[in-house]
Length: 194
Picture 1: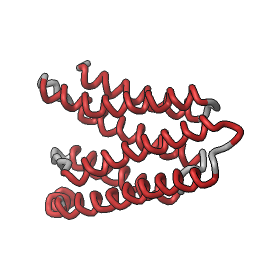
Picture 2: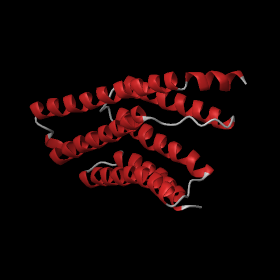
Picture 3: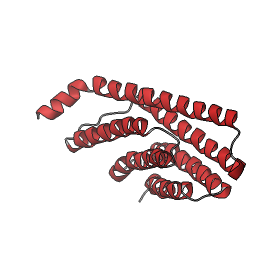
Picture 4: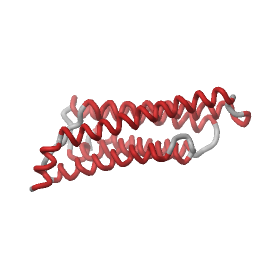
């Protein structure tokens, strides 16, 4: 097993650790969730970089990398919905796009067709990761204030920031999904027609 593939497995393990820590009350658990998420996000970049640099691109790695990303991002967003921090419908839009495109990519790969990622997809991923980091920081701020609660004016500002980040992420998710299908429309048509 290559080092990049091990990093993908590590990202999956860290993702489940993030979900668990988010459900544990207290500042230390939330701080640990943020640190674990940041490390997991770093492995997302690092495994691809190492695979290219060391020429360790493998079929297992190519399959596992996007799955690890989806588990980390979608699972964390779902945890935020459970904690009533973000609207469920926004996560549903993100989830439908992610699962649909992953399914289409896997179908195409089964027919020996590679559907490459583009800049829009990378922007969407960066947006998702940044949004999750922002929400985790907001959770930390709430935990810091504890039982006294965040001052009302500050709470409004924090939630405005969270919603603003979510809107940017949802828009980029929709744009990248539409762009993906438009860019690959001819290849997809030929693949389905086989």
